[in-house]
Every structure is written in C-alpha cells, then in structure tokens.
Image (tube, rainbow, N blue to C red; front, side):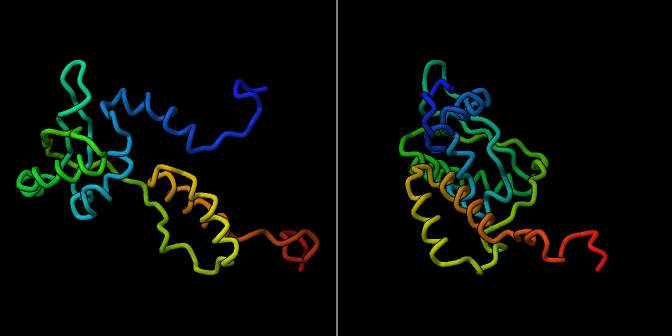
Length: 174
C-alpha cells in the first residue's frame, strides 16, 4: 500500500510538489513562468527568447532578475520591451516577482516538435469531448489543464488496432 492510504489522488495536486524542487534548483520560484511563457510573453517574443533562471536577493522571493536567452538580433527589441514584459510577467503571476530582465545573447535550445490541438482531427465524439472537458475542468493550473486536455483528445482520436480475428492483422496470408 502506498503512503497516501491507497486512495487515488488528483494529478493536479501532485504535480506542483513534484516540480517545485526541480524548478527551485534552477532559480524558478514560479514554474508557471516557464510553463506559460508563450502565453505570458506572447508568441512572437516567446519564439525569440526563453527564460533561463530567476535570481532573487538572499531571503527574498520578490523583485527578482529574470535571465533570458535571446536570439542575437532580437536582443535590442527585447531590451526595449523590458518594461512591458516585466508588467506582463508580474500580472500573470499575481505579484511582483520580476523587477528587471538580464539578456544573454545566443542560440536558443532546440525545442522538440509537439503536436498541437490543430493537428488533432475533429472526429471526436461530442459526448466524449464533453466528458473530457468536464474531467479536466477541476485542474486549477491552466497550463496543466491544457496539456491534459490535449493528451485526452489525442487518446480519443488515436487509431485503435483492429480487433483480433478480423483478417486485418499481420501474417494472415491474405
């Protein structure tokens, strides 16, 4: 039996505890900053820079310095957008977590190609989609909710193997 008493627990309750230590080691007091970077910064800015770490004065968790890796040519544009970007970040996270931004020019890390919701076929049963939406509505974190919903839609639309004995399996000689 597990330490939780054997009862199923919501994934939304487990994820923050699991990611807090990893995010904290890399200077991210708010993992939401990284998870929702594209929504906070905007698609154009997010495609040109990524957060590397967040530094605070000793014993503080406010007015930090956000370090961004920026594509070389975009550094000047991001520098001019710093006040608006700081305001967006603080508004999205609900308190003054960032006071300044420090830019580091260089190539951005390669991002794996991810399936988007547009790539998922629309041939999902409306009742199944409504049930999925109702299930993920309980997840408080918007980024996690979107990810779980995308996963659910992908599972609902994935091709199922043909039932055994239908003649569609390999090696049937047909």
